[in-house]
Image (cartoon, rainbow, N blue to C red; front, side):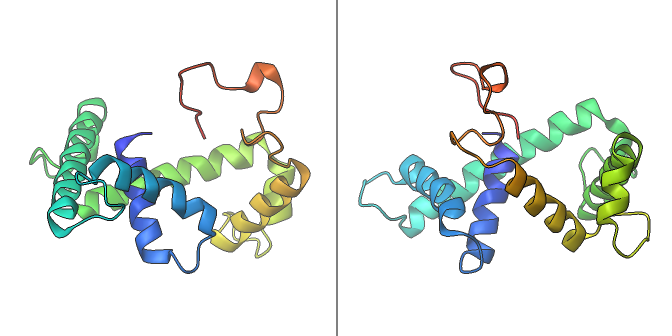
Length: 161
């Protein structure tokens, strides 16, 4: 699992735990506890939490540097790091590209789910599209929609979702 994804899942579980499906949050939390629970008591002590936080911050910083190496244009003030505003601008640009790709590649689906006809899919519209997709493509084997052998992840490789 990518460092930023693990961090995001951890934060999502912490912030939205009661609202999220229990299965979705238990696995990443369990992985974090297994990884950082030095005394193996099943919970993270304050020092173990500090160790986990430092490790995740280090991975996040490395991810940011890798991102800057690939996309130096994201650092608009050229200070060598990405501020919250620069990250927000990058996310918005990426979302705009995703929306444009969806419109071009799947115009019928985009038109169907763009219920307010504003040209983009908001969170509720994307949730409706996801729900319909999941209803049509049940997980079945635990690999998402990778039901066919040709679509399953290779041994030892993480699935890309």
